[in-house]
Image 1 (tube, helix red, strand yellow):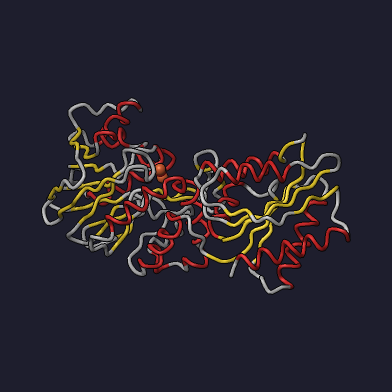
Image 2 (cartoon, protein in one colour):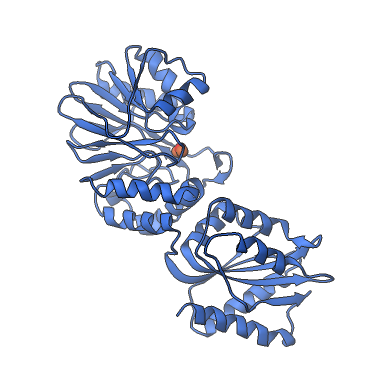
Length: 399
Ligand code: FEO
């Protein structure tokens, strides 16, 4: 049975959701599932905007057949070639052999790399090229590295619709509710949207900024991303989040404490610090166990908060491995502009603090506060003054 939604008079959402997949890209947990969005325009010509992941291809094909209602498919615009959107290109060609593919030169190259049989079918477009499908006129806008190099977005100036590829997307399956005004985004979606952005596109902040700049010069009424809700009002909310995330500016003044502990002693120090912060009035504090929290959640939270405290056991004279993995992920995703404090622990040779300082020092615009603490196995009364100094230095740095 087909399952579609109307986005405008002539544009239909023909994508789908899946809730089976445990890990997106085989890395990131998606307990709320994910949607793969695709859109179909019925004009003098019929135009499909991107395909979907192979896992929902059957639903996708039924959706297209239902909306086309016996018409043929004239064009397929491929904004992004990652297989979660491009997996069904050949299936569409098999079913609609006269379809022509509109994409960038690099996307065409990737189609060949993936082994697609597309010879004679591709219309290559460049930045600023336009096409008319009848009533609807579109402009193709380059979006390299948002999130692959071949990516572009397509702007339909007739309806003010931006087909935004990975930009403005989110993890999370769609429970029948397609539009942002049908959900409580700030309550139910923002965590997944942030985790999606920061882990998938977070590394490419300058490229996202460049796309935002281009987007600011066009009159966008509706944003149709490839994952998550379609935006048809309150666009400023989303654009503000993207502005902050792509600039690596924190959303909130607050302290994220991440601890790596083997036997609970470093965790105990983290709890002590959090309590002292709260008692001094800084109540926006969260604590995470680095061994129990998937790193994609840690990255997302690190983009959110202004201050990060890393409390870490020493392990084989090095940084506790799960903490090292988290720090390396921060580095890989280009995270910057945070204020950090370090707590190290060790029973015979505490070393993790110096090593973490070194790694954080290699990242851009990180402020590492001088006050830190080196614990021998457990926090004791003798350590209280140093812990209070840490609290004061964090609060002072927030002014
Ligand atoms: Fe959802 Fe970069 O693909």
